[in-house]
Amino acid sequence: MTDPTADGDFPVWRAPDGTPLSCREKIKVMNENLTEIRELAQDALEDGLLMGADEEQIRAFLHGLVDGLANPYRKTPR
Image 1 (cartoon, rainbow, N blue to C red):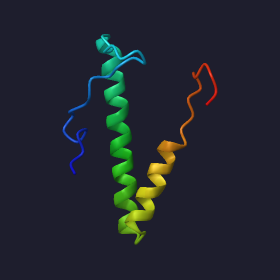
Image 2 (cartoon, helix red, strand yellow):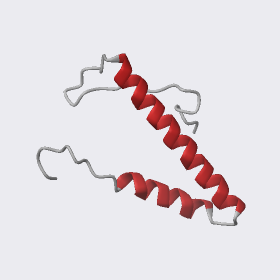
Image 3 (cartoon, one colour):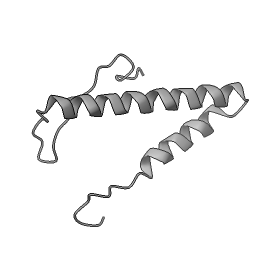
């Protein structure tokens, strides 16, 4: 499976009601942030592999990191 963000092919970003975001500056910032996160995660994976860490453990940790992110703007608790 290839990573769609590897070549800058990002999805259409949408608001919670499903409408596409229209502000180009917001979209640009979102894409830049995610590109930077991808690069940092790739570096962490490569460094871990070079140090002899288990690839699946690194990937599981990165998945958990994303799953553990909190939304400070949520109006109603989950």
